[in-house]
Length: 240
Image (cartoon, rainbow, N blue to C red):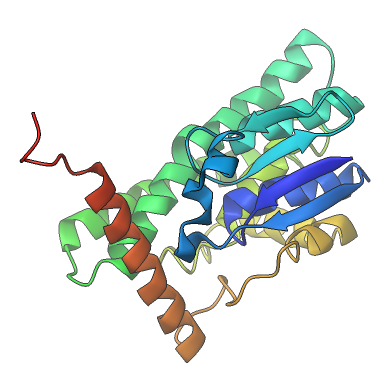
Protein backbone atom coordinates (compact mmCIF):
# COMPACT_ATOMS: atom_id res chain seq x y z
CA UNK A 1 0.00 0.00 0.00
CA UNK A 2 1.21 3.48 -0.89
CA UNK A 3 0.42 6.57 1.18
CA UNK A 4 0.19 9.57 -1.16
CA UNK A 5 0.66 12.97 0.46
CA UNK A 6 -0.67 15.44 -2.05
CA UNK A 7 -2.84 18.39 -3.03
CA UNK A 8 -4.74 19.40 -6.15
CA UNK A 9 -1.79 20.73 -8.14
CA UNK A 10 -0.12 19.58 -11.37
CA UNK A 11 2.75 18.03 -9.41
CA UNK A 12 0.34 16.29 -7.08
CA UNK A 13 -1.78 14.95 -9.91
CA UNK A 14 1.27 13.50 -11.68
CA UNK A 15 1.60 10.88 -8.96
CA UNK A 16 -2.09 10.13 -8.49
CA UNK A 17 -2.41 9.61 -12.26
CA UNK A 18 0.55 7.22 -12.21
CA UNK A 19 -0.89 5.26 -9.29
CA UNK A 20 -4.20 4.95 -11.11
CA UNK A 21 -2.50 3.87 -14.34
CA UNK A 22 -0.46 1.28 -12.45
CA UNK A 23 -3.53 0.06 -10.52
CA UNK A 24 -1.57 0.43 -7.29
CA UNK A 25 -3.61 0.62 -4.10
CA UNK A 26 -3.00 3.85 -2.27
CA UNK A 27 -4.29 5.96 0.57
CA UNK A 28 -4.91 9.60 -0.24
CA UNK A 29 -3.62 12.03 2.37
CA UNK A 30 -4.55 15.55 1.24
CA UNK A 31 -2.59 18.43 2.77
CA UNK A 32 -4.09 21.90 3.07
CA UNK A 33 -1.32 24.05 1.61
CA UNK A 34 -3.04 27.29 2.58
CA UNK A 35 -2.77 26.24 6.24
CA UNK A 36 0.88 25.26 5.90
CA UNK A 37 0.33 21.59 6.63
CA UNK A 38 3.21 20.79 4.29
CA UNK A 39 5.53 22.58 6.74
CA UNK A 40 4.56 20.55 9.79
CA UNK A 41 7.23 18.32 11.39
CA UNK A 42 5.46 15.04 10.61
CA UNK A 43 5.43 15.81 6.90
CA UNK A 44 8.93 17.30 6.90
CA UNK A 45 10.14 13.94 8.22
CA UNK A 46 8.88 12.48 4.93
CA UNK A 47 9.73 15.39 2.66
CA UNK A 48 12.48 17.68 4.00
CA UNK A 49 11.65 20.24 1.30
CA UNK A 50 8.13 20.76 2.60
CA UNK A 51 6.51 20.35 -0.81
CA UNK A 52 3.94 17.96 -2.18
CA UNK A 53 3.74 15.29 -3.44
CA UNK A 54 5.48 12.59 -1.46
CA UNK A 55 4.81 8.90 -1.05
CA UNK A 56 5.47 6.32 1.63
CA UNK A 57 5.62 2.70 0.51
CA UNK A 58 4.17 0.79 3.44
CA UNK A 59 5.08 -2.49 1.77
CA UNK A 60 8.77 -1.60 1.66
CA UNK A 61 9.56 -0.80 5.30
CA UNK A 62 7.81 2.58 5.08
CA UNK A 63 10.19 3.82 2.40
CA UNK A 64 9.59 7.53 1.72
CA UNK A 65 10.08 9.27 -1.62
CA UNK A 66 9.75 13.00 -2.21
CA UNK A 67 9.92 15.08 -5.41
CA UNK A 68 7.26 14.24 -8.00
CA UNK A 69 9.72 13.01 -10.63
CA UNK A 70 11.43 10.73 -8.14
CA UNK A 71 8.03 9.36 -7.10
CA UNK A 72 7.19 8.57 -10.74
CA UNK A 73 10.51 6.81 -11.32
CA UNK A 74 10.17 4.80 -8.11
CA UNK A 75 6.66 3.63 -8.99
CA UNK A 76 7.62 2.77 -12.58
CA UNK A 77 10.64 0.77 -11.49
CA UNK A 78 8.75 -0.88 -8.64
CA UNK A 79 6.05 -2.16 -10.99
CA UNK A 80 8.02 -2.56 -14.20
CA UNK A 81 5.50 -0.40 -16.05
CA UNK A 82 5.33 3.01 -17.73
CA UNK A 83 9.09 3.01 -18.37
CA UNK A 84 11.22 0.63 -20.45
CA UNK A 85 13.92 -1.38 -18.72
CA UNK A 86 16.50 -1.20 -21.51
CA UNK A 87 19.06 1.59 -21.19
CA UNK A 88 18.08 3.56 -24.31
CA UNK A 89 14.34 3.27 -23.75
CA UNK A 90 14.72 4.26 -20.10
CA UNK A 91 16.90 7.21 -21.09
CA UNK A 92 14.32 8.48 -23.57
CA UNK A 93 11.67 8.52 -20.88
CA UNK A 94 13.96 10.21 -18.37
CA UNK A 95 14.99 12.87 -20.90
CA UNK A 96 11.40 13.97 -21.38
CA UNK A 97 10.70 13.66 -17.66
CA UNK A 98 13.64 15.98 -16.96
CA UNK A 99 12.30 18.30 -19.67
CA UNK A 100 9.19 18.72 -17.56
CA UNK A 101 10.97 18.89 -14.22
CA UNK A 102 13.54 21.43 -15.35
CA UNK A 103 11.51 23.38 -17.91
CA UNK A 104 7.75 23.01 -18.23
CA UNK A 105 7.04 22.96 -14.49
CA UNK A 106 9.30 25.83 -13.38
CA UNK A 107 8.41 28.10 -16.30
CA UNK A 108 4.66 27.55 -16.01
CA UNK A 109 4.91 27.88 -12.25
CA UNK A 110 6.59 31.27 -12.57
CA UNK A 111 4.09 32.32 -15.23
CA UNK A 112 1.34 31.50 -12.73
CA UNK A 113 2.99 33.58 -10.03
CA UNK A 114 3.47 36.69 -12.14
CA UNK A 115 0.34 36.38 -14.31
CA UNK A 116 -2.10 35.21 -11.63
CA UNK A 117 -0.87 35.67 -8.11
CA UNK A 118 1.23 38.81 -7.77
CA UNK A 119 -1.00 41.83 -7.07
CA UNK A 120 1.23 44.08 -9.21
CA UNK A 121 1.62 43.10 -12.86
CA UNK A 122 5.31 43.08 -13.78
CA UNK A 123 4.90 42.78 -17.53
CA UNK A 124 8.52 41.91 -18.43
CA UNK A 125 8.38 38.98 -16.00
CA UNK A 126 5.01 37.86 -17.36
CA UNK A 127 6.34 38.06 -20.92
CA UNK A 128 9.47 36.15 -19.95
CA UNK A 129 7.75 33.17 -18.35
CA UNK A 130 4.80 32.96 -20.70
CA UNK A 131 7.17 33.21 -23.64
CA UNK A 132 9.44 30.48 -22.35
CA UNK A 133 6.44 28.26 -21.57
CA UNK A 134 5.22 28.73 -25.14
CA UNK A 135 8.67 27.92 -26.50
CA UNK A 136 8.70 24.67 -24.54
CA UNK A 137 5.19 23.86 -25.79
CA UNK A 138 6.50 24.35 -29.31
CA UNK A 139 9.30 21.86 -28.61
CA UNK A 140 6.68 19.32 -27.53
CA UNK A 141 4.51 20.05 -30.56
CA UNK A 142 7.43 19.58 -32.94
CA UNK A 143 8.36 16.26 -31.36
CA UNK A 144 4.79 15.00 -31.25
CA UNK A 145 4.39 15.67 -34.96
CA UNK A 146 6.15 12.37 -35.61
CA UNK A 147 5.51 10.56 -32.33
CA UNK A 148 2.28 9.42 -30.71
CA UNK A 149 3.79 9.81 -27.25
CA UNK A 150 6.93 11.49 -25.99
CA UNK A 151 9.21 8.49 -25.55
CA UNK A 152 7.86 5.55 -27.50
CA UNK A 153 4.95 4.01 -25.61
CA UNK A 154 2.86 5.98 -23.13
CA UNK A 155 5.02 6.54 -20.06
CA UNK A 156 5.64 8.57 -16.93
CA UNK A 157 7.11 11.24 -19.24
CA UNK A 158 3.70 11.77 -20.80
CA UNK A 159 2.02 11.82 -17.39
CA UNK A 160 4.42 14.43 -16.01
CA UNK A 161 4.22 16.78 -18.95
CA UNK A 162 0.48 16.38 -19.47
CA UNK A 163 -0.38 17.20 -15.85
CA UNK A 164 1.21 20.61 -16.33
CA UNK A 165 0.48 21.44 -19.98
CA UNK A 166 -3.24 20.76 -19.56
CA UNK A 167 -3.38 23.85 -17.30
CA UNK A 168 -1.90 26.15 -19.96
CA UNK A 169 -4.83 28.59 -19.83
CA UNK A 170 -4.17 29.23 -16.15
CA UNK A 171 -0.66 30.31 -17.13
CA UNK A 172 -2.08 32.53 -19.88
CA UNK A 173 -0.47 30.55 -22.70
CA UNK A 174 -2.44 29.41 -25.75
CA UNK A 175 -1.97 26.20 -27.73
CA UNK A 176 -4.41 26.81 -30.59
CA UNK A 177 -1.51 26.97 -33.05
CA UNK A 178 0.03 23.71 -31.81
CA UNK A 179 -2.11 20.92 -33.36
CA UNK A 180 0.14 18.01 -32.43
CA UNK A 181 0.26 19.10 -28.81
CA UNK A 182 -3.53 19.45 -28.82
CA UNK A 183 -3.91 15.94 -30.24
CA UNK A 184 -1.69 14.55 -27.48
CA UNK A 185 -3.51 16.53 -24.76
CA UNK A 186 -6.89 15.24 -25.95
CA UNK A 187 -5.72 11.63 -26.29
CA UNK A 188 -4.34 11.44 -22.76
CA UNK A 189 -7.41 13.20 -21.36
CA UNK A 190 -9.51 10.28 -22.64
CA UNK A 191 -7.70 7.71 -20.49
CA UNK A 192 -9.93 6.53 -17.60
CA UNK A 193 -7.00 6.32 -15.18
CA UNK A 194 -6.03 9.90 -15.99
CA UNK A 195 -9.56 11.11 -15.31
CA UNK A 196 -9.49 9.33 -11.96
CA UNK A 197 -6.04 10.69 -11.17
CA UNK A 198 -6.95 14.35 -11.61
CA UNK A 199 -9.81 13.83 -9.18
CA UNK A 200 -7.46 12.58 -6.46
CA UNK A 201 -7.87 15.09 -4.99
CA UNK A 202 -10.29 17.16 -7.08
CA UNK A 203 -9.39 20.78 -7.72
CA UNK A 204 -11.59 23.44 -6.17
CA UNK A 205 -11.39 25.24 -9.49
CA UNK A 206 -11.00 24.19 -13.10
CA UNK A 207 -7.41 25.10 -13.98
CA UNK A 208 -8.27 24.79 -17.66
CA UNK A 209 -10.59 27.80 -17.32
CA UNK A 210 -10.60 31.09 -15.48
CA UNK A 211 -12.61 34.17 -14.67
CA UNK A 212 -15.13 32.99 -12.10
CA UNK A 213 -15.33 33.79 -8.39
CA UNK A 214 -13.77 30.46 -7.38
CA UNK A 215 -10.76 31.19 -9.58
CA UNK A 216 -10.37 34.65 -8.05
CA UNK A 217 -10.53 33.24 -4.52
CA UNK A 218 -7.98 30.56 -5.42
CA UNK A 219 -5.65 33.22 -6.83
CA UNK A 220 -5.94 35.27 -3.64
CA UNK A 221 -5.07 32.26 -1.49
CA UNK A 222 -2.17 31.36 -3.77
CA UNK A 223 -0.85 34.92 -3.55
CA UNK A 224 -0.86 34.71 0.24
CA UNK A 225 1.06 31.42 0.04
CA UNK A 226 3.63 33.01 -2.28
CA UNK A 227 4.01 35.97 0.07
CA UNK A 228 4.29 33.65 3.07
CA UNK A 229 7.02 31.69 1.31
CA UNK A 230 8.91 34.91 0.56
CA UNK A 231 8.71 35.99 4.18
CA UNK A 232 9.98 32.62 5.35
CA UNK A 233 12.98 32.95 3.05
CA UNK A 234 13.79 36.55 4.07
CA UNK A 235 16.70 36.76 6.51
CA UNK A 236 16.01 38.36 9.87
CA UNK A 237 18.13 41.51 9.93
CA UNK A 238 18.19 41.44 13.73
CA UNK A 239 20.13 38.17 13.68
CA UNK A 240 23.69 37.60 12.44
